[in-house]
Length: 157
Image (cartoon, rainbow, N blue to C red; front, side, top):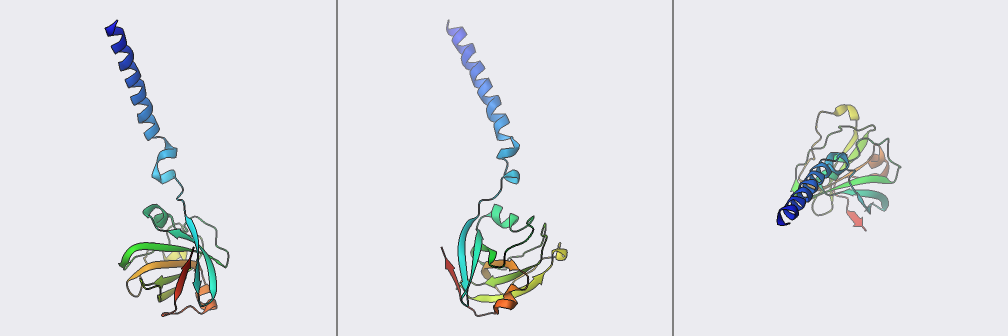
């Protein structure tokens, strides 16, 4: 009787182990196939409001805007880093040109990289100073809105 119970328990443990092994390797469970979940907010610069998706984790930051067809005029993506640094940006997988607005830890624009083309990949774009935030928006909008170093940036929930 005890022997039969042990055999049943071992068989159940084996089946559970096989299930767990296959579940862990399922394509829907891997980070590569999981779409990042972007939170949303609004950025205001010089009275202009831009709806942004927040890229504050490694998965979101690697994905960025790559693979998208474009952005509406008042849309963008705000990259948020834990501390100020010289963060490199590239255009891997991008299908449209963008402006990069480099923002320091004090929420002031440190610089603007205008009309960065997808063809610039594999090159990297660097900020002019240490930054903690980077706003990506459609090419030409930074000039159209008159964004310049020293402008205050307000993040609204």
